[in-house]
Length: 106
Image 1 (cartoon, rainbow, N blue to C red):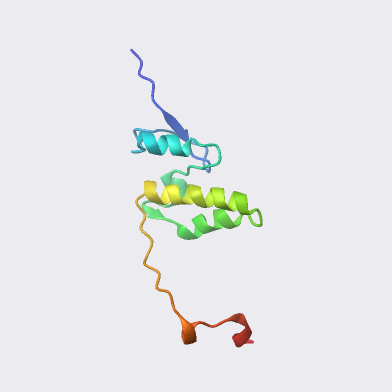
Image 2: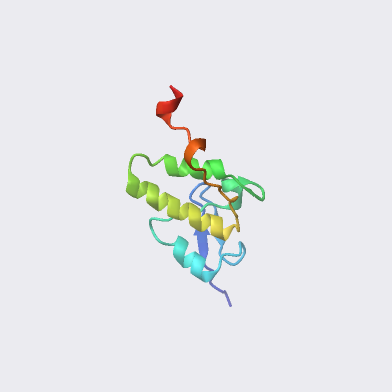
């Protein structure tokens, strides 16, 4: 008896992976199956276990100036961050005298 398995294709390397083998939950599988979202395998998104945030931002920027496509790519990247359990560092906002605007630099 042959068991059917859900598979997902990496949009970068075009490799197919079993949803279960890579630890993709059914809800994540369904989400990544939406036509406007992209899935990238661990090998494609970084170096081994390290998520490459610069590549992630570059994939978003590649769609400029189309804000709709940039938004869709940002949603894909957010889903990838969740799937790979990536936590971004805390961002500290600065105010007032510590903010340098382009007008004050020149």
